[in-house]
Length: 201
Image (cartoon, rainbow, N blue to C red; front, top):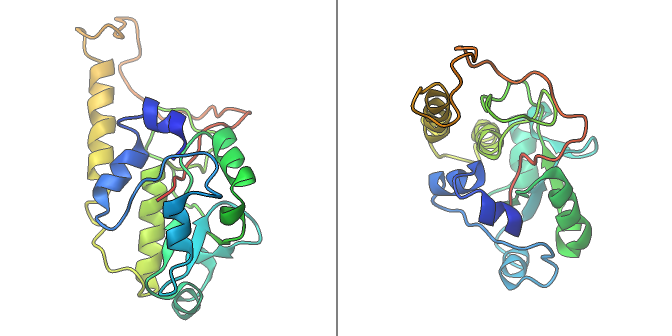
């Protein structure tokens, strides 16, 4: 997780995702080349390490058979994700030579983000917790992951519900009596993408 994200987003979806996953951790930094904890994971002989990052040439979890996913990732593996703005995430990857060497995985996003109160960089972009939720379900199909994901997004959905109610509360300093009473998803996406959908786990 980029330090800026860690300091500013105490209720961000990266932190929220960490709280949902028992066997996970957040490592804060920018250049992880000499990061002791990251390198401990990378040299672990019991499992392989992968990076979840968009790309055409990546191992696409959505387009592979369960047997292929199982053979490629295997068990006792680690998946690294980057959490920060898109600009920060690219910088983290550019200078972290150890992460650059990892095999990359990605997925086809066929769902629309529920993060309707926050402007996303593109129509198919997901928040961190939604991305992890998607990956977990794909790994379950490959018999690699066994965790229950049925209620995984509830904290995220409750946060959105609370924030939209706050925006419509007459006692809120952000309330406007002339405002549209209906909260609708943001369909006008930024041309310059800065919001990351993934974080380092």
